[in-house]
Length: 395
Ligand SMILES: Cc1ncc(COP(=O)(O)O)c(C=O)c1O
Image (cartoon, rainbow, N blue to C red; front, side, top):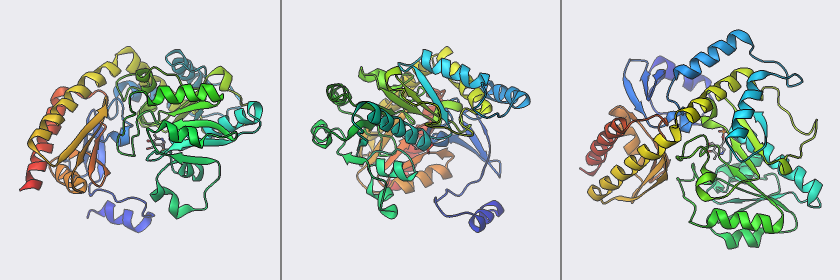
């Protein structure tokens, strides 16, 4: 264990089992540890480093902004947040934006917005229906929204107002809907839950149900948004539009940011209803604007689609070779490989030893979420390491 790792053990609350490398530098799709060893990064800060590590366009925008203005209070107008909001609205189906600092905070705000809507238009309805295997964040309310008992049980009693129902089951949503329901909140593709894709008509049917009942559809695109699934936002691929959408992760290339977007009719906050000290921070918004503009101007989502298909196709070939691969699924560059046994930890460690960073999303499944600018040849490089790792586990 290195000196840094010893100090971490001394000073940190143990909330995560870290892998035994200390990353000191990143460039493009690669990072380097304190001993100068290079790794190909297919974790990308948990789907955050959209344009890879330290992308020049973002470094320049942030550097310029840090020299000019870092932060004022939201009592004043500032330009970077207005520019980012304009870009988000011009390129989505939503009309209004609120900025915050993380995904969980964006979802909290989205639920507050839905409750505000419920107070105004739905006789005080406040309940939000969410799906099992979802992940919406670590605040107490988002733990209640997250349909995974392992995140909920240690913190009971949880805030009221959330019902978790089976994913991909429209009847379960219908049964759970009552006069107290103000919204349904879903990830278009479940990320942390194991890269679970919606069945063909699920999202469209949920949308129609929300319209029928006059309740709101909130899409949590914190992991799927900003190009990750091969379109700028995942909802575009399912022929629906949300009333509220949340973003974070890949929006600002690693500078903390979160955003709530809403249609005009759902945008019911009035002054004083909601707020944030750092939300809309000038540096974060400059990073967000540079990231999003690059993604839009350079058709990065198209690259995600092409390389994602290439990657998925190659993984399916690997499945022919290794019978213990039971599934390959995903959308764009959010891909999972599932095994018949709980070998994901050992595959992650073997790949790490061979210079590839990947994520264990379940004991028996890996998740790949590389930078969106990844190339076919980097995919080939990752696949050859993975192939070796799987071969070594079999033997
Ligand atoms: C879909 C989704 N929602 C919300 C969150 C929480 O985001 P944050 O960790 O920024 O609070 C995550 C994080 O993984 C996520 O994947």
